[in-house]
Image (cartoon, rainbow, N blue to C red):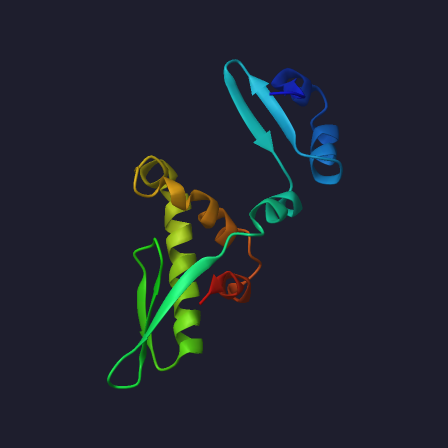
Length: 137
């Protein structure tokens, strides 16, 4: 990794470090053998901007819509497509919060590790409408 700074240098002038991360560029930091990345929410949004959830919709015999998200164990049923998409977004938000709160459990599960960037994409949204915008059909 190029441009890595030591944690000791970060500690010496933490305010400048934060200002640089937020206003200049992300920073790679090394402490002992650990490396980590600090980036602003704006940079994270740019990094995750192209991630979308692919939804599948099925019209049921009663006229309701059953919707799923490809690659995720999320299934909802609602009166129409718009309500189904909103319900998917609500379930995605709930799952993202659970994933983040139980990060070690979910991230280190081989079948859920690939969800991580999508979880961040959901968590970084300002509101439910932002999550809805991540769902394409």
